[in-house]
Image (cartoon, rainbow, N blue to C red):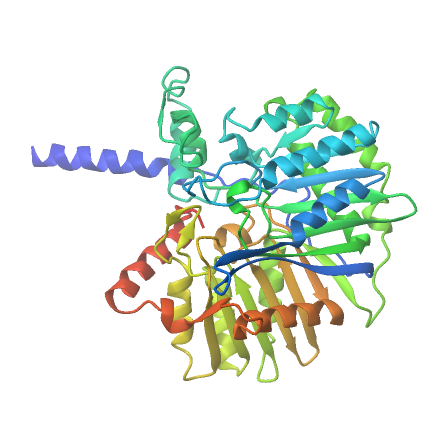
Length: 508
């Protein structure tokens, strides 16, 4: 009897392990993990979305530079528009109905619809993540309105991207071949985590959601007659629940916008090969729109490179972002100042690079979100508080300071590295959180890298210093001690964070 039990147990373990043995990771599709040459630019502006609490007037003070610029760029477009945004929906999560939130999602849709009326022949392409229809057909009505106005909407085909969830993805891939489809998958029994008043999700939607992968880009590219295209890249999601988040971005006019456009068109092209990922007149209409846009921009190989010593900007996407962050941190030394503003910081290679930079004497300041708020729900501080504790333990070996963004229900949604030192003048910003999922070719991401761009660097330095010192009269940052983890809480959360980071079984 005991032998039979062991055989049975061994068979169960073998069956459980089989998906992991057979699973093969997908290759990256076209237009991803790109490292562009350095380009010069005719215009560049730092853009800041800033939310602060004014104690004297007892009210929230908001600035929406990024979003307002996006609306202006759409209105001014003359030859084409490409809009690619991760979260673009009206859902508020658990934010109280009385909470004041600007309707970003509808405003963006209306801006594109107005542009279509003003310019009936202008090629406009929308790319977004399938989370915005909750991996099914629960999208906002403006997607149908856009499609009805002749603006193709492409929901990124995430099945063509590598899988980040090491625990779930092999099992889901293997057993989905044998599980029956139809009525069981269509049962609406799952509470809607995005819209409390919305329809429940099906089991099939839950299954797709648990892959935890995304087109996480936030990119707008527009064309003009007689001048170079312009690109807006940053950390802003045009979603109502994200309306109060603090974000950073940049507007650039020049060849880098053309490079960005080619990357975005490639994503739309391979996503639209599956007609189910297209809302509108189908894959052929997407192909025609892509062709019209390509006719308005030069080929990538014809773009002029930056002159030596000139202010310059480059496109970095997916894994190339991680490579750039590491390259900059790995040469930081005692003559280097490193300032970072980050929403999620968990990637182990970046933690190691910071550790070594601190030990070499670099002056490091981290302004982090405390990871306590998520659309009206409370989080447990993972991963930022655990990583902050790990780095602060080095304070005896080098110069490391950590402060927390003083949020009031919103998120400090930054993803910025600033490095100034011996032969370094770098500003890197965009969509990519500093996590395994965002930096290791698992999500779609887009960043801009500025080098020797003194005006851009100075603008960010002034912004960062104001938050770090609360110089503008608002409480915008808090001492490390206010949210420091320690003791047993730190230990078990560190174990959990390290497992979540390794496995991909998390939302960060």
